[in-house]
Image (cartoon, rainbow, N blue to C red; front, top):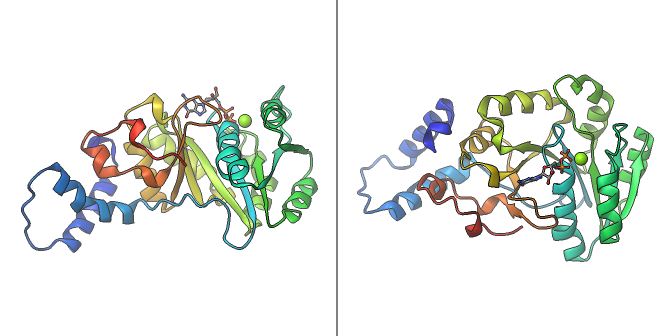
Length: 258
Ligand SMILES: Nc1nc2c(ncn2[C@@H]2O[C@H](COP(=O)(O)OP(=O)(O)O)[C@@H](O)[C@H]2O)c(=O)[nH]1
Ligand SMILES: [Mg+2]
């Protein structure tokens, strides 16, 4: 897996290791090595699976390219962090004029008994953001934006980026590859995402690009989705250990659920 990491990142990791371990140490086995590299890895790849901004209620949005897993990630979080914790959940879908685009979330909402609204205007969005109660969890779905649509994201991006109480997760499929991930993340810069949420970990064993992107963009990994089961198949990013993965331990079953 080390070959999947960016050369810049490997250099950075080596530097951190040298800083911490200037004296020579003998490593008995793989477990020793994992223990040695775990702390610098945690520094390089911070994880944060706390949903919402402390003391500011729970408003969360997902942004990202079409088909990357935004809507289903939101449904999984609604169950694990909303219904499962006794919060009053509401889904708000920013209107997407593509045929059937908002219906998926609406269907999940009715299956799970969750309130659902379509925000047809930015004013609807602001009104909902202003109305989140202390026990509420507002989960905002946004239309998928491809490279050519990103200019259209302008007003939406400005509004979402301006709300300090809103936690913004950039959703990226892990199979995208290092360079496309960099380019895609850069395309969404105007949204000022504060977390990275990776999807489709079950589709590849090449997880290196996820760690590279997290380290190079200095944004914590929040959650990862690991399959098609909805709700379910979501883990807290903190349960991923890069050293264990480097040692070939990529069993999804070992990861802790969110
Ligand atoms: N295998 C796999 N499929 C996923 C995962 N997350 C989402 N999907 C699938 O990806 C497709 C698009 O998901 P969706 O949430 O609608 O993407 P959106 O367009 O970004 O909202 C659906 O068929 C999902 O079942 C995952 O972790 N693993
Ligand atoms: Mg969607």
